[in-house]
Amino acid sequence: MATEASRDVGRRLCTLDVLLVALLYLIAYRIQAAFSPYGPANPEAHYFLLPFIIAVFVWAMSYAGAYRFFRVSFLTHAGMVASSLAFSIGALLTILYLFKEGWMSRIVIVWFSLSVLIVLTAIRSFFIWWYFSRASSAVARQPKILIVGSGQRAKRVSEALAHHSEWGADIIGYLDNRSSSQNTNQVADDKILGTINDINKILKNNVVDEVVVAVPRSMIGQVSKIFKACEEEGVKLRLMADIYDFNIARMQLDLMGETPLLSFEPVAQNANELLLKRLFDIIAVLMAMPILLPVTIIAAIAVKIDSPGPAFFIQKRVGYRKRIFPMFKFRSMYVDAEARLKDIEHLNEADGPIFKITNDPRVTRMGKWIRKTSIDELPQLFNVLLGHMSLVGPRPMSIRDVDLFDNSVQRKRFSVMPGLTCLWQISGRSNLPFDKWLELDLTYIDHWSFKLDLEILFKTIPVILKGEGAV
Image 1: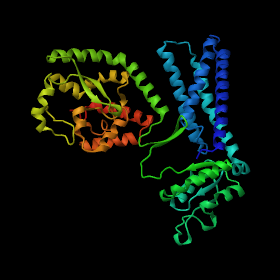
Image 2: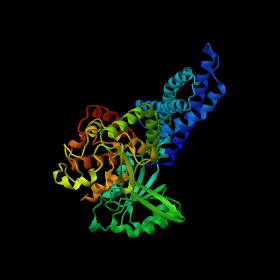
Image 3: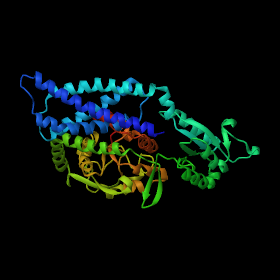
Image 4: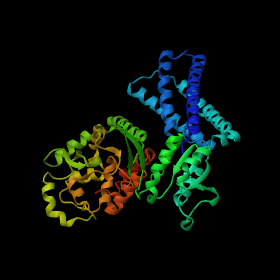
């Protein structure tokens, strides 16, 4: 639970990080200037890069949770600093490589990296230990909370406050309107201060920082009385929003003019991670192009020579949010493959709406080889650059296959960007039944992170080299 005290610690740590990073970078440059036999290395350019390094490092630290989670181990602090530092140096070297700039001093990078890892980790850990070790200060920062409700939901929110708040919480009591004959309280009786009708009196006579409404759906009609009381007393109000049985991944409050809209998203992904994912896709594809472009040209010529027809096959696929896009592949079948599908559909070996047979007569000689090596998928890198696909994500399906879906949950796979590889690719590929394929897609969607994408990419490489599960 974020409190003003927690946000204050985060702001102070962010300021401390900015100052230390700037200081350590300047010290690293002065060390290079003092001890290098070649003298100072391009001072104007090095100073010009400092704001970029600070901005990327602070963003990476924020992404790692360094300004939200404080009471963690020393190793966790070190891990946050190390990962943020690695990302910042990686971003810096990528920019220098893309613009073909080679003037950055390696001595500055090495000294800066070592000093940030050691000094920043030590000072941050000491600051947090000192800040939280002052017992009187920590108790003073605990928000005093009144919980409206005394049943299972009230018990659940009080446990959440105790276990998920940096400063803990001082729960002064509970309110409810149950009579003694309806006594199903899940909290201590001596902590029940009265009923909802007593809220004005209790707010007036007690120090209350926040009111948390944790009543069942049947009592939601009485919330307006609580809103009015909190408004009159100037007390923050929080409302448990899990009133309905809805699997919520993210909840967000937006203002449309003066109208508040509470959004419930069953699939939600971190916007910063999505931006990082997109940048990674673009950079990775561009850096791989010098190697893959010759392979693409050779494969295109081989497909063209092997059988009549175009080298590329373009098919409409269903992508993000069910938007249709043209997916590029090397043609691995004869040009009349689509027309011949109805003649061999009864030979389908796959479960569910997808169509797969081991020895498809429509596949050309070259097609069998490029499918086995996954070279037929190389043109989809252009789909990645165009924003139709990502390197990692559920495979885009054809309109025919989507029309055969018999379960609405199968369409949840369209809530994320489709990709070249996913969990199915590293778990058996075409050897998997459709239900297992779908299960893996949904697992990926529900547990997505940029780290998971990297793990899938690294595990995909040996699978492709072995040709496992390719049809």
